[in-house]
Length: 65
Image (cartoon, rainbow, N blue to C red; front, side, top):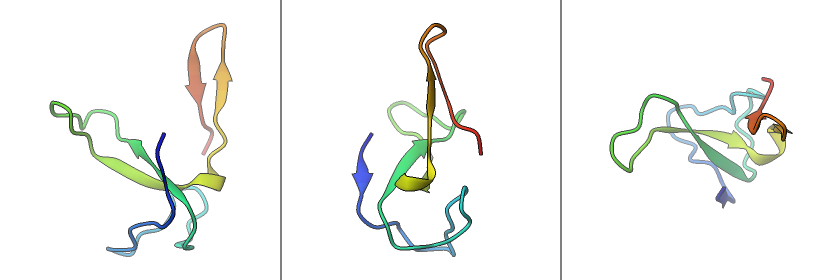
């Protein structure tokens, strides 16, 4: 996962988790169903807002929003 030091602040962006537009590191998470070839739409999330949980026995990564 690539970390960006600043979000793209265009179009009144707000983190989907904390609902703020603070200028702090973000990651891009792909949006399911938007892939065309090697391109996919993505949403910005503050890095410190995501807290994934890995179910090793089922090979599932989850995030509760």
